[in-house]
View 1: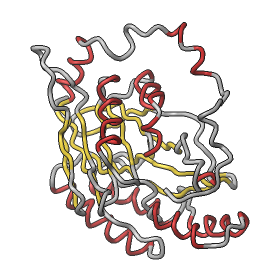
View 2: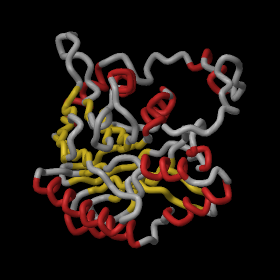
View 3: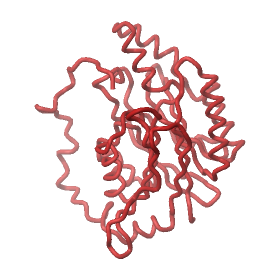
View 4: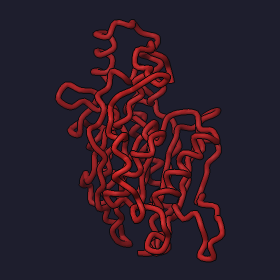
Length: 304
């Protein structure tokens, strides 16, 4: 296949107005479709606006029972009107949707993204593994694994994976997705985006030879939704710019086109990825022991 076109939907949502969020989402999905998108991706936990929710928790009682009531009033599942609306949008526009939401499953709150394909079928649901446990996100239950799915597009099948925001700060997140076959990783995000955080995404793309598509909320110090094609060097061995697009801080739809033929050929010929790993030396990576100065598990809640 030649191209895979992703629309980064860098737009606000509002904690208190789910109906308005759905109207805005459908409008922007139509804009993306008109621009040739195969898939649209929303920022992290878009059904409630991640930052709005965290700030609301911060202003409320610190009693955990009360905070759980707040979360329970906004959490949804895949049978909710909100989720079913996105299945309708995906099927009617024949365009995949990466929708993010505060989910509740078996009484547990999770930070979740689901990929709905162009046929309206949910092909992947991933909950954030590396929850920000130094904040109110410690009330959430972490996901248990990383997943890869086959995404059917009009140009062919893409192996797609997902990680969420803070996951990018752990190289293992993208690495396990690469090992499971991912060609492009979707990264819903909600945090200030500076050069250091952008460099983390560049490193994940470079070291795993895969595409990265990250969508953030707009706003001062936020924004900078971006896509990286994963090809760090040219055929002549010269360093090259991996950016397909980088937004500013304004609200909008930002398009990125991944050349999948070139990426697949690059992965066959370059030396990163899985070929020369020395797995026997990595045993310490599986240890759960946390030592000073890194033991911060008892620090108080803070906003992000």
